[in-house]
Length: 203
Image (cartoon, rainbow, N blue to C red; front, side):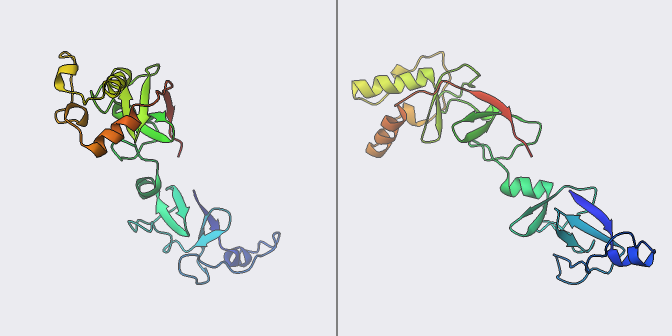
C-alpha cells in the first residue's frame, strides 16, 4: 500500500515543532531530495516523489488508491506483479485471481477446471484418487490401465479403452509408444495420490 505523508520541510513551515524533524527525504526512484508537499511512502522506509512512483512494467503511476508491490527494488502495480510473479496454474500456466478456488497436488496448483486427468479429461473432484507423475494427472482408472499395460508388457491399444469413455485424440496412451515414451509411462504408473485439496490463493 502507498501512504501519502506531509514532507518534513512543509511541517516545519507550518509551525509544527512537536515532532523531531527527520532529515530531508530521498526519493528511491530518482535519488534526489524530496522537497514536494507530499511524499509517497511504500513499505516502512521507501519514499518517492509522486511523479517517480510508477510500475516498472507498464509505467502506470501508483498512489494511495492503488496496491503497490516491490520486488528486487522495482515497484509494480498489482496486475503486473501477479502476471509476472504470481502463482500460475500447473496445467494452463495462467494466473489466479484472489477469489479463485484452486486444487493442489504436491507443489502444483491448478484452476478447478484444469484439474483433470491428462488421458480421459475427466475432472478430478475431492475424494478422487489420482496419480501425479511427470507433471501429468491421471485418474484412478487410467492409472490402473497403465499398471495393467506394464504388467502385460505391451503398449495399450484402442481396444483396451472402454468405448463409453471419452479420450483425447492422439493422446500418448492410445498410441504405440517409443522406448523413451515407454520409460516415461513406466515412471508414471508407480503410486497413487489420494488427497485432493481445494483452497484459495492469498495475495
